[in-house]
Length: 448
Image (tube, rainbow, N blue to C red; front, side):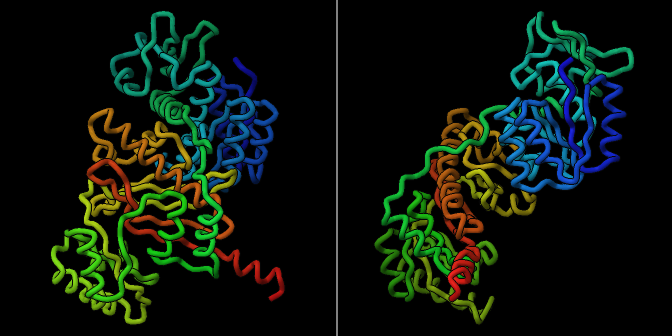
């Protein structure tokens, strides 16, 4: 067996449960109770000790990121159990997995995870199951790599628990359901992890242009202003024009080419809140002028006091899938994104997941695999999946670069929808950038 694990807990009862259950498996642990466990765990991991955290309260974002990064830089042996988070699609378990820390939702799977790590098991380790019943083999199906005759072997022990026989010895792991959860966490947390990648290279003029859009008091930018801020970072935007009259709308539509899409532009009325304020597939100048007037009438019904900037006229493009993206800054140059489907079925099912950006295309594929409707997005062919993930990783990386570089001013970005077009490329259909109070704080600091 390896040296004991330092397991940091935020509740004394949790430490007692861990000690009691660890005695049944033989995992060597030292439970330590701290009001804020993750910073202590990060320091222990940095010093080279195997560490784990078991917490009832959701950890703070900066503490979880620091723990994950320090553990990877230290021993690389770390684990997390968050008892309030039962779904690995969401914060904080999704973030821990994306940062390379296996994360589970209960104490027993955590101990099974520590036992597997003690035995030297990782996501690529092949485990033989010849000594298990067909029922146990079925329970573990899908999370095991095949093993040769000389590889580690899972067996049932005399007390009905699963154990792992290796050349180094025999390790008691736990009940099948706990072993399954631990193996799934190991596989989900394996490389490639989220790592900063090359940022878009901005010319000084482009950087100033973005800053000029963002400069000002706290507010949520309109769709046109948000796109102007995102454009220097190479975020793919549609070909469209903001117009303020029916005749200009018809003229721009003819220039772009029919059919076109018209959408109301307002910082107070969002298309994702009011889908009737956008119309797609409009044919002919007459119909464009009619649609322009109708959008203004509908806006007045929704909110007579709403500020109206005009109507955007853009090309009408067939869509394979609609996604919604919300991105906010994390520490260490990282960004937390919530990615989900924006179509009516996806919205009704709340089919979404959290992810750490930027991320390699391989990690993006794993992230999308957490969505229940991922097959509709990725397609059946390997080549199609790879192309979609490469394209999406590029778009998300540029959004992450914008959020990170502009974090003094930007609280977050909402994109709804991000359209996967029929040709396999993406474009931002609607966007909103939330501006923080950096401008106001700067004014206070100067005494104005």
